[in-house]
Image (cartoon, rainbow, N blue to C red; front, side, top):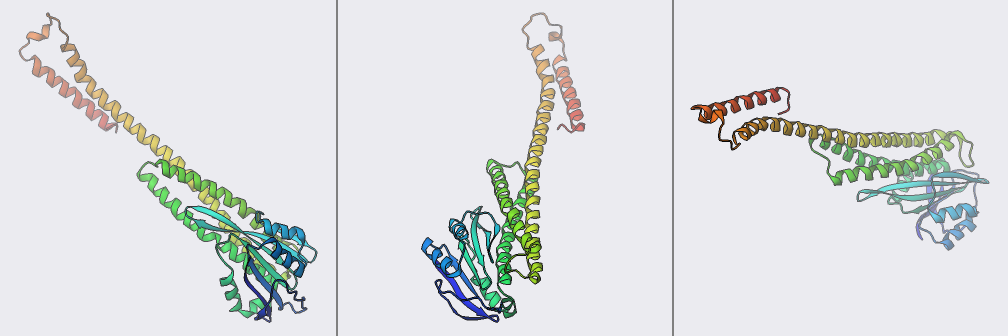
Length: 322
């Protein structure tokens, strides 16, 4: 396990470092609490934390497994929250998990596979002591807001790619790689929606329910987190519709272009049928053909071919087949 940070805070200020096996008794002053951040802990290390802070065994097991959907569980006077983080690796969206234990005098975050550490968030909160003074519920809000804010750049990146693809479909056919990318993006967005739905439910519970360790004054902050999730969810829905329209538009344009080519081939075939038919008639090897002895037969036939082909070309041009 990597212990990222473990500090005791009082009145908005960092007081001292604490160890994971040290039990700091809760204070009546909500501004005094322990904030511990760990990453990828072992079973023994989680058991040490559980013993020191009376963490529920089921919550500890969920925090170790790191395969949970976002949720809020209540264990006596403590809360256990699971949030899913997201980041981009190459062309794929990868997911991590942040499990959070909240008690009256402590908040413990356990990260798995998250690309964004909480050190920046901790520094931002320490720079504003009035936020830390308000207690663990405001720290919890800051962590959830930090996780949700990480979603937006991912969706904006996909949005830019989809809009570029939408513009390109007008200019040329989509290739096999581009069609494959469309279906890959759709799968990733569907999977992302499976995360966003439970994350919105988590934020909604903090807004509407009376939960341990959460003051009523903190509810508007969690409402802001819920609004951020809804915004991302709306963007994901819109992107899925755009991807569907890109694929459908590509098919329609391809059918239209195929129809144009078919009409052009049919028009040229009709034009070429005239000289082909006339040449076929005069190519027959019969001895007695009345036109064979005509003085001006050859130029007349050529003229007839030229006139008929020209009339057909003009006609097809007006019909926009050529």
